[in-house]
Image 1: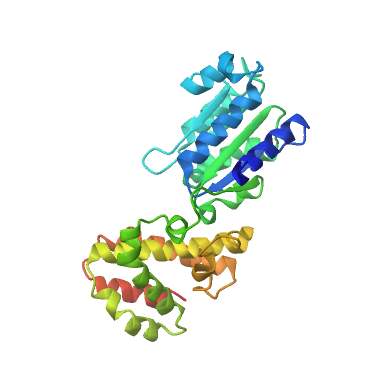
Image 2: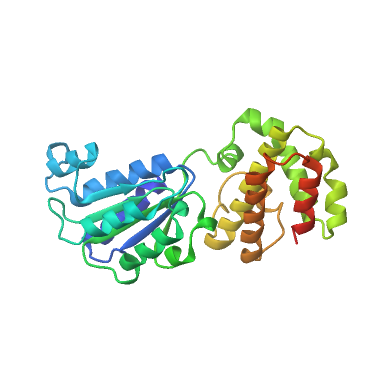
Length: 286
């Protein structure tokens, strides 16, 4: 049994013992695979037969027609209010064919403020029989109002190589990793002038290459954040060479810097002057 299997089995056990949480936040590096595992767990929790192969409840979950098991995922990179209101309306009554009313929110970090505030009804005043599963690969982007009210579950997939940790291919590693490491060391410099001078090599690269370099920089900062918040990655191969690149331990500051990198990535592709834009990041980095 893998560690992930043990995690799932422990959650199932908590339901059998009536000690389960009413909301779970799954932090993962593979949202589709995590969703699949959660869906299989949901089937086991709601199955009314000895075997799920003969269970009508499980069949309706498989085909997406179960009225008591609802999935929400972002449209155009945001989860708006309407599907959340639908969950609340549907779950106003007892489950029709399942043991529980359950909702699964993929990429929960993309919940709009309005949608998240509406969900607080379930999180602050949980009702028996209603359970939520939130999935994200960006814990640092989750709203504190959600994370503070969920049981956080960490599930990882892959061989735990540096490629898996960074979610990149071998060719991307060969092309961009060293430059990303250099850029992190540049950003570690204490003064803006030093950062601007030391980033000349990065500024000279093609725009698309700069974007890919900063995506790796962003991922390494996220890994550092998750390590500090959840004590993750310590036992994984290759993790410390990434964690040691950033000597910060202030979680709030790291989250702020992640936000700045992502704002940079969002705006950089539209900015004409690469050098000025990277200089702006170097100046505002503090």
